[in-house]
Length: 277
Ligand code: AMP
Ligand code: FE
Ligand code: FE
Ligand code: ZN
Image 1 (cartoon, rainbow, N blue to C red):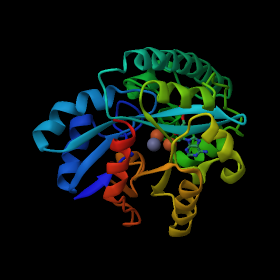
Image 2: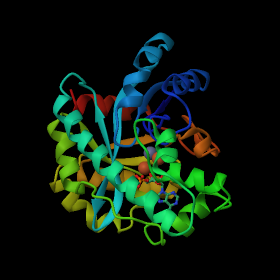
Image 3: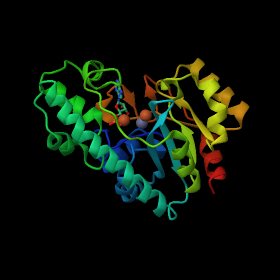
Image 4: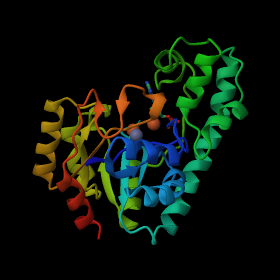
């Protein structure tokens, strides 16, 4: 049985519906799955009954975009008690409002740059959560960029001309919100941080961060070893997952990552449950 604690549905920027994702988990022998859509629980909520039917243990998760040292970074939240989340669910509604407001400006900015693109087209793809990857898909389909990556590099990346500011929550606030709701707060794919992880960690831990995503399909074995040793040093829980997005990231497989480079050990789940129960 495989474990995967990082996956996306088409309620955010994955390509599979919640029930399709459960079906993939069943076929690939993922027995414990966390759905961690960006800024929404909609995918988790909709997958619950299919997971129950398939005998898959579904863990409630979320991936929050938050500002850290001026850059957007990702924070995972895991909740084993889901009946006390009403306050947290109210808080993430604000994230959706700031995202919608950003998306309206992003569409306008891309039109300014000469592209024929509307907010309605992007939102038609985003369901619960429209993000820059949906804009990137449209730019590719309309021939403005040859690939999703080029759409980011040339237009959508923080350093590119189409980038518009988004009012994201502060990283430390997001950590506290997750912890106050009884969740485990895990630093997502630390390899992608724009700042050095080692000097940044003490302050994160002080603010309540209590886990680090040591296992991820973007991590080399050496990266994973480094993050495991940091987990050890700072008393953090370890989490891990593929970051499966379906056809949006076709080289990443549920449960096993890129070319089989992911293996999330069982103790990770035991420790996660012990810490948040
Ligand atoms: P958003 O939350 O709408 O601002 O979109 C952020 C998402 O876009 C991230 O989760 C990544 O999946 C993707 N993304 C951001 N920057 C890049 C980049 N430079 N190259 C590829 N994907 C990116
Ligand atoms: Fe994503
Ligand atoms: Fe992420
Ligand atoms: Zn993710």
